[in-house]
Length: 240
Length: 219
Image (cartoon, rainbow over all chains, first blue to last red; front, side, top):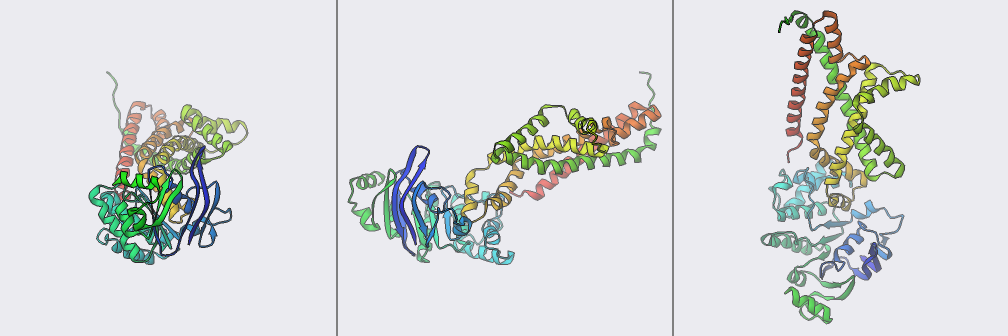
């Protein structure tokens, strides 16, 4: 379970998260929507401690993420993350992109790591690209590679940071399909997204962020189809 | 133009010249390896070091890049010698060239590090890699790709710069040429021959570097 308790995050003088409370159960899919700059992505970066927080607490499976004694490298094994700019490692083949972390971090043998990598790449539909270098692939393929790379660590949670925002429109579908696949596998996911219909159809709950606070949170269908707060209504009518 | 060329002494001395050319290559290659290691460290100190370490690295880079290489060599020769610390001619050249290479390469590395987006580090760390694992496996290999050609450039420069060794008594290609030329009084012939050998050495370095590049970087 991931729990955020009154989380505050500042960049210099600017408070980006103003007291976020959120809990995500095992197996749950939560989509986070809201305008750019509302703090959605920053929240994800705080959950795996790529960004520090100023006050509050984030607890993942009983571990206080931002406590000094927390072993972050150990913690991050359990939390996969996929970025807006897929960040594939350009100097490694597709197979090595995925196999590297299992080898280095989990201490798997070369053979084991490659067989894990191959399995995950097939899972996301890249079984025929193993020896290709990422720069030769489309954005959608690279994003699926990034998903496979995170999955190879067999994480308990997956964080998705606007994974379709940088893609050409015709490539969005293949990545969203991969996310659906994960949901069907029972993966716990927090998905920051601008794809409203995806949020409605795929997630259990949707949280609407506005200027660093969760303005509204609720069952996906209900929040998208029948938002209660005025700001949520405004946002949803603007993006439709 | 009443100079008469006499090539026989040069041809007789060719084995000696070739051996000296190997010494040149050896000094350049060794100083390059040391320079790469030190340059990498200096670049990291300048990017991430605390104030004293940053200053140390910066002073090194400033001196290496903004004073004549000859004076840097003299420092390790006559400079240290004045304090009773006598290095062999080979060590003087190796230290001088390594010092110089490290200074130049540090700036190449620094530029390389700055050119890698920090999202690469974030991606590596998000997979549970430690900071040093991320640098070793993700960042540094990409930096080497970025600065491979400037690196080759510096190696060529090191081959040519090693000729300064003759001024501290090192018998590399230039030192050997000087020695043979003054023994036979065929200065023009010997230095012409040395120039040709230098040229060929550099061509070999460039060719090897090109082949290595194709093998190492397939993306």
